[in-house]
Image 1 (cartoon, rainbow, N blue to C red):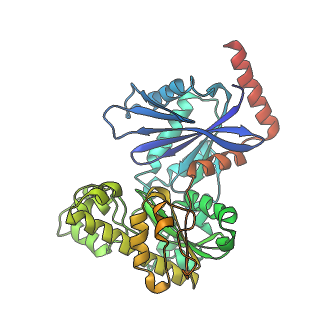
Image 2 (image 1 turned 90 degrees about the vertical axis):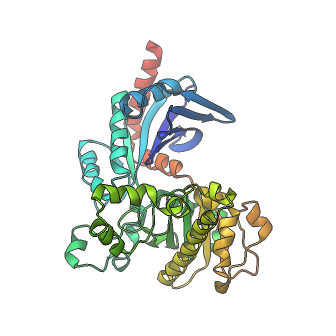
Image 3 (image 1 turned 180 degrees about the vertical axis):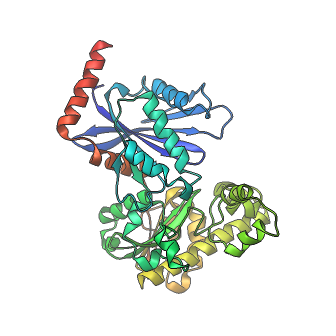
Length: 409
């Protein structure tokens, strides 16, 4: 096993997704993946290598992240030669105005990322702890950051501006947009999978536990449903999406809720979970016969349909809609319910193609083409990590170092 390897870390609020890539001629090829569910009582490394699926128990707790990541490296090494690891790429939710592309991580860039924690309190601090944990386990490793906001930096000022006093905009209170790595991958994939619409006016729907939509024209982001924070836009698993700010003022004032309690309600108790009172997992709601579950699904789909219309207004037209991410790629019922509310726009799904999650799920008669395109945020992170790796000469020295380490072993 002499392949150069690269890892990606995608830190969510309760999970860590790890991508494992082989690097050949500056190209990243997916060879494995792993997931750690930090919400589980007993932590497990769910490692996948080809058709092999391994669930490896972890002894460290989530509050000892350096020890946990060190153990992850140790228990991954028998399956992938981590002595040939040349870099680690991280997904960072918020890049603010400071970052317009991927960066190498050093003291300066880490300090800039840390300054943005208040803009993404659910994700940003966890990602920073993960960066420190990787450095603690392997201080020699090159690390990079890829940002979920940078893809949306092309949006015009009028779209990014909130209807508030101008001074707030000048201090960074504006619409940023998120899920950019996913949108970047899907918009690029359209060039080969559906070149007939890749340059058109398209709405991308990233529907997962976190969910948003993005309007693109000729592959460039021009608007999105998420704005200043990851709470905005359409309802999600546990987040409300758009919410009248008067509700927050009422709950903080007459409602007597503390700021911390409101944060917990908005990030963890709302959305599909809050409406149904059953679960934030759309699969459980679809399987449930409860009226509350049906209501949560109906709210989810009517809001998505409405947001598609709003984004079409920004685009001044609509040629295609693309569904992606866990729900978007795998739930025909949700796509059907959304399309049914858009029949007046000329949406017409092919039931058989939709049922099998085909690439194109609309009929020839549909005035708007509808597609299902799998996303791969980890591959985007890997490619961006490679783009900011040191020069080929430096990389050659890194390989020699790892080869020397092998000989000593």
